Image (tube, rainbow, N blue to C red; front, side, top):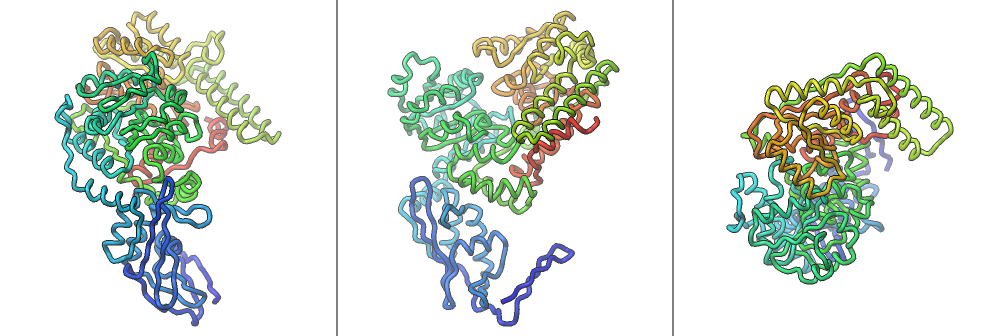
Length: 616
């Protein structure tokens, strides 16, 4: 048969076949046969539709469902029409099915509802006993009406009650979860309620950044008096500590210690694993992520207000830990979702991914569930550089362009060029903030520093207290010196601050000890409640607005009773303006997958070069 395909002006694809082709049968759910067998870490699936005219394999049917095709070719001249109900149910199954090497179809626990729907509507399903157990657990979980445990020493808000119930149902089913509420909405207390529920099933493990570990200790003591928190890093004999873990015990371990001691930790059977600030696991190739995947836990939940920051690989890495198998292998996920969405902006792939993760990712924003939270106002503060600063910046920019052009002409590898581009961008960003950050001997004053001093003094005179964030500790050091010279009381926190000192600084600021709290963006993005401040100043824009939002949410969170104002100081005519312009596309990537709207592409080395090469 000869077929011709033509793309019509309206984007419709039409296919003409010769007169010998004909529709020989119609297939529905009663003609579908599916067999599911248990493998080591997943389930294999085979099957197909059998009609008098022949047989169509399940893989072909699923591919047709993904393409929304009504007819499937039986052979060169014959076609089979798929009934509407069959197409619908196959479409639901297709999103949860991946093809492995050799054409083997793989499915995970996430496919249980889709397979059950097939059986309920007439398909013949022959499944392994373990699959039937999962189906039974799902049926029982959907009937659960979980309530917060009576021993929880907290009154949950309505959305937190819903979050606890959602976690409880997924735990009863045997799936995995990612609780992705906005920062400041109380993900910790929802997880603690679940830990109380599951305490009788065995010990729990909480993984968290070192800076947040003591916060977990405090919160467990405060909200869960029936649980026994154990700080792994403080144990004199860690092996003995692991050997004695039992019911009601909650082991709190930093990601660093978990990575170092994974051989010992992986031998313990935990009832529950909670990975807090789970964006720390966003790179699947790191030892940290590999170690987290090796933890043996019956139920796993990731807590992260930013489960997706830069690209879809981060989402895959998070779910490879929280719910192994949900998104297939990395190659399967990359082929099915990452490339079509990030490179081609494919709306169908985006919708399919959003549909796939929706049951296992719960995301609520402050606007949705905390209408009583005071308003947050964002103000851009443009900084006009002096003529001396402008000359320094332009000289540095042109030098960077010349250097990068030379690397390109020499045929340097993209990895080296990308490294050099990022280094050049960092130098320009430092120069946009303060000439001394670029050249410590420079006598040129900083327009941004002068505007910051004016702003902080204005806020202080009005009785306000302020958080000041920068990703450059060298910048914060200069700011600290200038503010103290101006008589402003200051506290300082960065990644090198010990955990105990960090806690003391937070308590001092909350008690009213200082007007301004200078915090490095990385150190201050997690595990801090600083509602004593009602103003936030970002000295320099970061690539991803989600990181800045995390920092801002140290002040704009539950417990804040004053409106919060966020100031972003941006040097005009510099790379800072271009970074700020990129924020919209980063937010679009998150919205596209987590909220089902648009998507954005990942920055290439060429994109980064353009930030420098294009005249500001």
